[in-house]
Length: 572
Image (cartoon, rainbow, N blue to C red):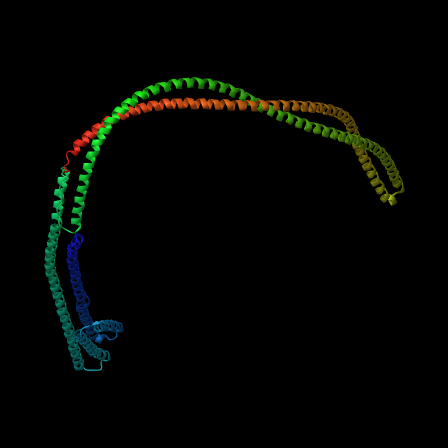
């Protein structure tokens, strides 16, 4: 089974993609291994070297403090210095033991574990030996020879510790160098393999590219040659491509298109010949029709002129009737408005009549009230006269009381010392009588002023009674006038209703006339419009026939040009 173009392209690009993916995977794996070795180098061996150096440094610091402790043995009274030395040395021991424990627990290789175990043992031996020296120095119980002996043991233990740490440092450095060499070897190996892989990949890509170009270039070149031949007008050529893939199908479709074009050009050639004959016949027919349409156009113009004159006459009649109808409508509206005004006047006269009657009733009530007020004021005047008489009597009584008090005072004066109290009473009675007289005089003056005011009120009420009587008479006259107005308004309302009814009938008849004239006008306008449209249509048809004649000539020319173009194609 032959391969299709899609499978060939997929195979080529699949091979290229597989090579590139393999290259990327191998490079990624190699870089991962290098990264792993570098991480092992950093985390395990370099940190081991650093920790070993740290233990060695801490041992040196501890040894230094030990020497200081021994130097100050003759000045033991300075307890602060000894306590400081002990504190620093204890801190060093704690830190060193912590580092040794962490490194020993994190060690993976047995050899690494043994190395750190030896460091731990030597550190503990050194600390024990040093403790004995320090304790002996504190107690100062032993001889100088014993101290020297203990010091030599401490020095030997310290040297053993340094040897153990040096051995550990050398061991870790060997591991560092070995890991670095392994990483360099991995990088070199990865570089060599990548170079080989890239070279092979480029070779595969070049081969697949050449294969793809060979698969595509041959058929495409053949199609290009056929396309150029078709562009030059040769429709008898065929694309000869023996392939079952998409390019073969494209060649078959291209051959089918050329065949269809050849058949189409043959049909166009035959149709152009028929079209040439038809265009000649159309040109002659359009010339004849054009002369006929010119005659019809002249007749239509004459008819249109006649209908224009009739339409203008109908419009004048319609405008006159419309004006008459508008005047009648205005009269109807005015009559209706006058009716409304007459009814409003009747309502107003009724309201005025009611108001006048109400005013007359109120005037009667005012007259009655004024009469009652006059009676009350007259009674008040009588009462004030009686009060004046009573006040005169009170004044006489006060005069007599005054005389009596004077006589009593005189009689009391004759009686001597026994009647002093009576004299005082008489004097007080005299004062009271004077006060009563003064008060009576004041009341009399007030009563006189009240009498004067009441007299004025009586006069004013009398005048008001006269005015009220005159007002009642005027209200009766106004009521009579309103009655006359009401009768006149009712008569006017009846006459206006009659005028409105007659105007309404005339308006209805005039509206019917206007509608009839409007129908006549519309009919005339429609006839005139039809005539004008007929004239315009005739004119347009005449122009259209002229255009058809020119287009027919142009079509004949185009057919000749089309025949010339068709002759350029090779169809047989």
